[in-house]
Image 1 (cartoon, rainbow, N blue to C red):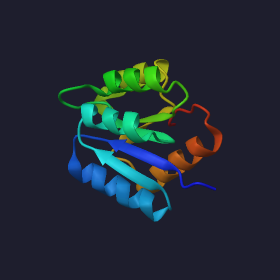
Image 2: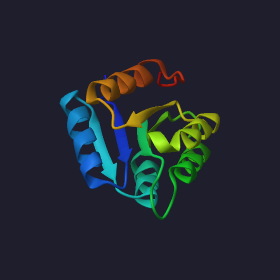
Image 3: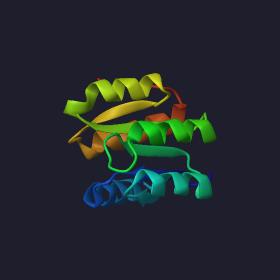
Image 4: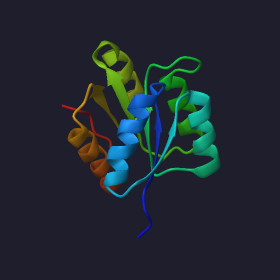
Length: 128
């Protein structure tokens, strides 16, 4: 069975590092990008089984990145990572095709469970 490939797109390097490290410990192959354009380049060049995407980023918003990912790869699941203040935006992302969202700051075990569930089922879900 191939190792699932995950791309983490977040403008905070520390968040990228922490998420990547936690998911690598679970056996996933993880690439990171600290901007929307760089993340899109990874998606286009390397593909992924799942994208973890920050909603608020400079240069290109997470919603714009989501839109472009869905144009390129409609079936690629995207989990939105959002701060509490951007909940309406997270819900908008769900309407635009995101598989679900997780609210920052999050428990890393909750993130691992969301990733595992999304990869296993491909179904959409919303954090409770």
